[in-house]
Every structure is written in C-alpha cells, then in structure tokens.
Length: 158
Image 1 (cartoon, helix red, strand yellow):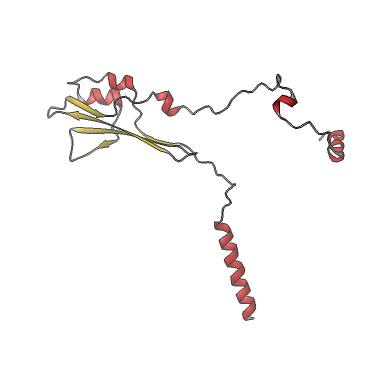
Image 2 (cartoon, one colour; image 1 turned 45 degrees about the vertical axis):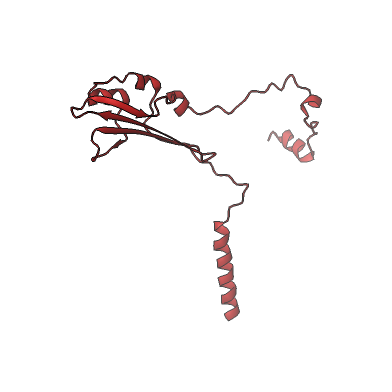
C-alpha cells in the first residue's frame, strides 16, 4: 500500500514537471509590440515657437506623459519591442511651454523615423527563380520516384 502511494506521488510529480519543460526546437510566435506616440520629422518640423498647446496637440497628438508636477512639459514616448529578437527600441521627445502656455522649446530625439519605417512590417521574403537553375548547379538532390503507397494513393486520387 505504501509503495503504491509512493509510486503515485512520483508519477504525478513527473507529469507535473513534464508540463513545465519546453524543448529548444519549439519556438512560439511572439508579436512585435509598438506603444506610444509615433512622431515623424515632418510633424516636428511644423512646430514653431509661440504655438499654443492646442496647436501642438493638433500637430503631434496627445502626449503620452503629462506630469502634474511639471505642467509646462509634455513627453512623447515611443517603444518598440521586436517579437523575434526581443530587442527594445525607445525614443523620447519633450515639448516645453512657457507660463502663458506657448511653445518655448523642444528636446529629445528630433530626427525620428518615418511612420512607414515604424509601423510597416519588414518584408523578409525573397524571390528565387528556380526555372533557370539546373538540379546540378542548385545543389538539389535528384527527384525520387514515388513509392508503392504513394502511387496507390495517386491512383485513388488522394
């Protein structure tokens, strides 16, 4: 009786431990994460000293961070994390206003990327013309004749 309980505990422990193991050849799909404000150089170039808060909000959008202790400063933050590599790219851009609510100066990374660079997926496909390559120059193994089972399945139309 005691031995069967010990065997049951050992088996259940092994099953639970097996659920937490993931072989290295299994790769799950991870998405690219994009958060924050996407600012282009054209948007930043339209900023002029003396613009009101509403004009700046119209040009750049709502700021990501508005601090109650620094009401004369708006922070635009952008974060991009690649799903495949896990590499994180971040950008910061700050807009400063004077006491009257007029644009005084800007700071941070002014030369930011284009919208198409930040939001468009990268095309990782390439076109290979296999018609111009002979099997000898391509390094491909010669085509094998189908076996008995495949010929039978082809005969049935499957």
